[in-house]
Length: 101
Image 1 (cartoon, rainbow, N blue to C red):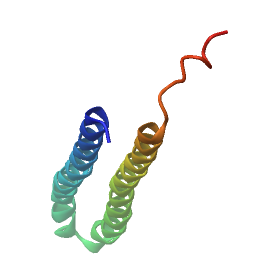
Image 2 (tube, one colour):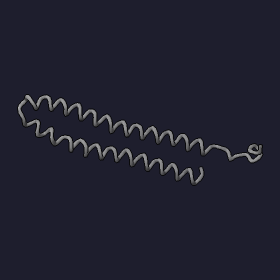
Image 3 (cartoon, rainbow, N blue to C red):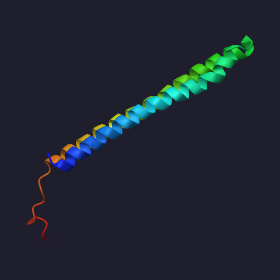
Image 4 (tube, helix red, strand yellow):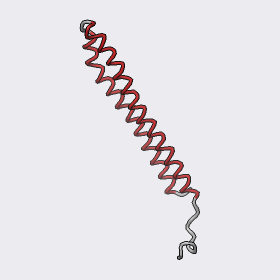
């Protein structure tokens, strides 16, 4: 394995991990921030509190889905790049005679 391929693999792994961990951190912040108004609405009469609880469930599910999608797409991209690096690593050097025209 060439040194360039090793470095690229490391870079891909680092970027993938960074995006996944970053998405998880932002999701926690997003969820905590969105929770604040729902806590206030829980204290209101049930005419408001009941629908607000439903909206909170939908909002929470949507947020979780979005951030899980980001993590999933990142994992797929990392795998695709790994496959591409595998292919690049196994390619034979160009034959100078075959490139003459």
